[in-house]
View 1 (cartoon, rainbow, N blue to C red):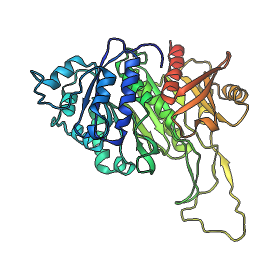
View 2 (view 1 turned 60 degrees about the vertical axis):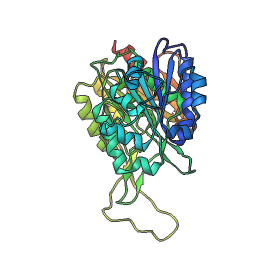
View 3 (view 1 turned 180 degrees about the horizontal axis):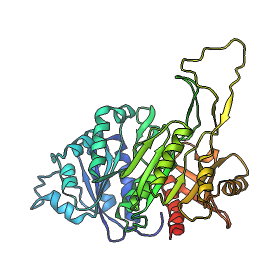
View 4 (view 1 turned 180 degrees about the vertical axis):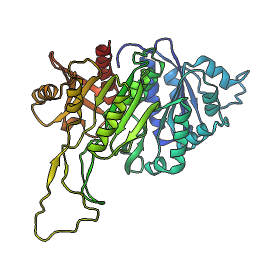
Amino acid sequence: MTGRPLEGRVIALCVAGGIAAYKAPIVARQLLALGARVLPVMTRSAQRFVGAVTLSGLCGEPVRDDMWDPSFAGELHVALASQADCVAVVPTTADLLARLAEGRADDLVTALCLVARGPIVIAPAMHPRMWAHPAVRRNVATIEGDARARIVGPVFGAVASGEEGVGRMSEPEDVVAAIVAALSPRRDLEGRHVVVSAGPTVEDLDPVRFLGNRSSGKMGFAVAAAASARGARVTLVTGPVVLSTPSGCTRVDVRGALDMQTALDEALDDAGDALVMAAAVADHRPAEYSSAKTKKVEGDTLTLTLVKNPDLLAAIGARRAGKRHPVLVGFAVETNDLEAYARKKRAQKQVDFVVANLAAHGFGGDDDHVLFVDDGPARAVQGSKRAIADAVLDEVVARLA
């Protein structure tokens, strides 16, 4: 991110007591670099992980950690909320999520969030099994349903224990990007309906086995989150993934390519303005489905008969022929000759532009290197998937105009 988009803005940066608290000073530095004034607020537990002197020294502001601070005359949480354009909670622990979901005000951070006058951005971080716990899922659903806070992450990766899973806090630059988006006056998709497909499709062989691919869904979810932040009504049609639903999006979970086709047709029939087809749809499916588990065969080889799945994007492109809407965006993952294959795909599917990347760059990560391919010269875009998502939507907005 370049420039100083947060010039004159005040961010209350609340730090909770989790190991990911070490990322909070990085978030503070990045916010300051973008022009913000940062007011550091810490829970008592946070100071077991990050020293108050560290945040105070970085921000040039006193660290606040007590609603009953004797050095302050008045209601500290109200005073902080009156100054702050945005409250960011980095990281947000499972305990703090529970208290936010219940509307508690039992410390300075929760009281500040309740009385905040601007947007709230929270970045959960915890062990993957905690994130997957039904109680945590209920709390997240409550917070999302209240539509008061934007949830950033968590993401898949290694956590402090050395285990891997969804629970790792989003990287500082993605948290900062969410804060910038929350404060951005850009609402250039207001009143528009954007349909996004994401993740893999899986084609079942039997109740146990399936054919699938390595798509994580992160790119499609980033597009959905960015479109929602820019004012769109978003329908997110996703294959099986382990990602939380972006705030403000209507999620439709599907499994196979035929399910996704039905869901997309229903969504676009409701006056869709744009389709961003980020899903990795299986090209083929088994010719027959076995209702019982297929037993191991004699011999060293097994022959599967596959049939071709419909080309979902090409079918939509053909139906749109001669019209400008909906805007159609395709994605192409290749292993070589990236631009040539992207141009061929664009022509075959009759879409407005194609976002192309190499398989070695895109799968599973939070960053990517892509090519935007339309009828002009290809344009390289590199950065976080959220930044690429906004670049995709910039192109969509230009075509809608």
